[in-house]
Image (tube, rainbow, N blue to C red; front, top):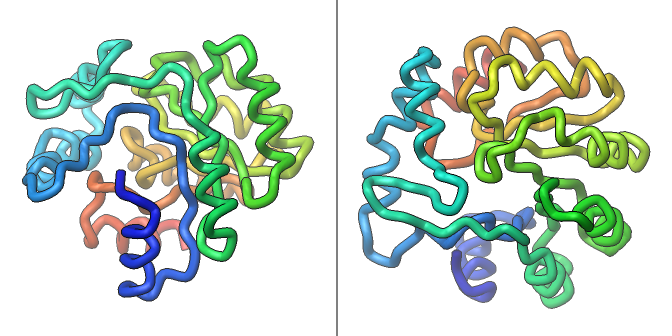
Length: 223
């Protein structure tokens, strides 16, 4: 979203030693001087996250149409083939500042081979999957899950609204390290309960979906 030197400068000011980068899956929603993230913060995203009702899950699914993210009436094109090379260049330029996730689209024919190649490179720590953005079933991640399990690398997943999808990989690949993004959106209540006794399954606490209150709530519930 920002030039590398700007990110490094921000990290220095905020006392952040290292950051993990992702290849973008869509055109950036960040606009200098705009209120878009603040509006998103107050939008249906947060209400959906907190109640998890069928209506809100259905609404969540309308944020993508296969080609675009649609937020507040604006469209942001989805990138079919994530640019992992940009992450590699950032790591090469600032190896003491950045890690990288390999961003993965299972609909690409060479996706697993691409993930395997980047995982062999310095600084890449795991694989990011986006069933929500790319609108695929969690069951399409079997190959990449097997690779991550064998390489002892975590699989970071932004879930879709597919029913009970958060149970699939932990039950099929019990030794796989799984991290569900944004506190487990859109299933946070049932997901937290499900993973509470599973040592290899985590949530992250990133994104504008979350308020400080719910970050603290997640930490209190999950430890």
